[in-house]
Image (cartoon, rainbow, N blue to C red):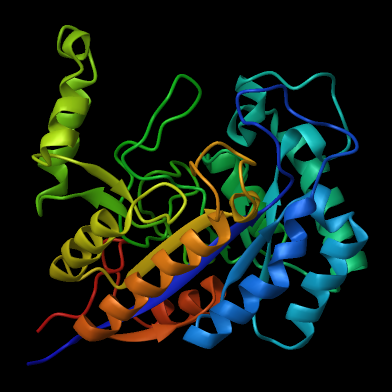
Length: 338
């Protein structure tokens, strides 16, 4: 039986730790989690994974963090990308509000200054000029894409599929890698300079569009009054799933991988936060042994994927190189067709 070719990408938002329901930390950020990175990198290498670390200002300005990541970069065992958290990335423009914590909501002049400061720090402390980017707290706009392209970036991964909140929306964006329009970041366009590679997300049914419509409708009154989405989740009739070992249990990630293979997705893209590697740092993982739990989930998912597809492990910029050779007449890159 023919197996589908698929790229596996693992990205880590490499950042400070704090309780996410508390005030955004600006100075003296705690980055104890970087001490877990060598062990995590060793684990990844044991599976053949080539991780991409999206590094923010707090980690890059920390001696232990920057030296650890410099070692990864020098050995070519991982990619170092950029991750912009507005609240701890100078220059500062006052206290960061909830809306302003999403890069997408900042004036482009502020984004430009912060991005340039981050680029300079990543070069000075880690020795890299990043080619890949993820915005803090997700979300992307045309103005951001044009700025990234002007700074030499070739990959963005700020789209969080099937998601919206009061401050940004990714609804309607392709779930597959696509060449985003520089006029509408959530739609494919004609440019071929910068590729969007969203994280893998979907539902436990094959028709993701139907799943999204049902989920969105039940999230609004009057259906949300009776917690319809939660009822469907617990009954396993409909689950929105993100391929993240800090958020999602193994069974649901395997279901998402199977659906993605059936839909011939060219990339399986898993993500997590470095802060989840230590116990109790973010509130995402309950209980002790967060590091072991995350590693165990990653191992099971990658083993399952290897049994059901021809997998190539690569960094996100390496994935961009592979995908650039594929047909994308509509601007969306599809998997192989039998």
